[in-house]
Length: 271
Ligand SMILES: Cc1cc2nc3c(=O)[nH]c(=O)nc-3n(C[C@H](O)[C@H](O)[C@H](O)COP(=O)(O)O)c2cc1C
Image 1 (cartoon, rainbow, N blue to C red):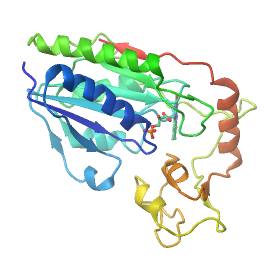
Image 2: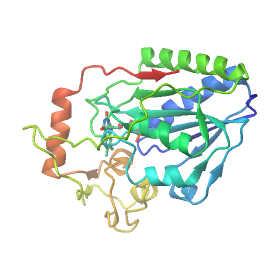
Image 3: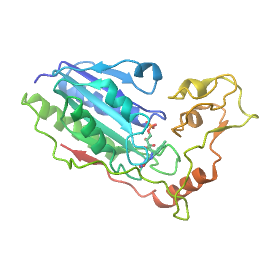
Image 4: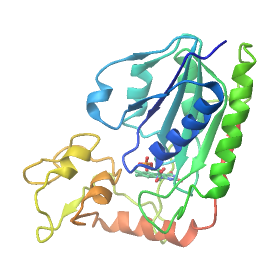
């Protein structure tokens, strides 16, 4: 097969997934030629239509890991919007230095089920959206080197022009979501938590409403009125630092991550 078009699609509320998706895709494009196209699935308007790919396209599909799986509100959207026709694909999962758990397998199986052939897949560590102290500095120079090597090997595989043999992974049923823990080791229950707004800092610029991937924030009041997936887009993008999560279970989970998950987690590369 000759690749005529490279497309990268990513969901990336705090930018880590986008950064890695673009790096790997640019590397692939250097080897295979052509200008990649990017689809930012974070923006709700880009999730309004289906995307169909052909056998001479290459899809790089990148998602963050939430609770050890694909984000549960996005997984059905990925499954109902992305369709291949024996299209080679490169699933990428970006995790915050704790673990990717089942997410990469979930993305591989989802894409295979939708008509894609997996050229290679990887889970790369990035900064944890919940804390600057977890996954600090990732991706670092070693990660970037692994990404370049991964892209070079993928390009070599794709340039052979042979049809791709199925990726050697465990194809059993996907396991449950990771249960976030508090500092005392008991489950942290923050499903209903929403970002609080500091009235002394908020200038009502509306940016939080714009960047919320679920359009759950009211642009006038800056309050989260709809479903919150705890992605941290509003917290990290607010220019005044006016947004934060105050839920005690959420804060205890973050403290637990900072205590236990600062050691460098390894990436997973499957070719
Ligand atoms: C709701 C939520 C759940 C997360 N769960 C995990 C997890 O189970 N394991 C992990 O290592 N990182 C986890 N992370 C961290 C993200 O995977 C990581 O920060 C990722 O880079 C975020 O992508 P983004 O920067 O593109 O938004 C979680 C982040 C969020 C917001």
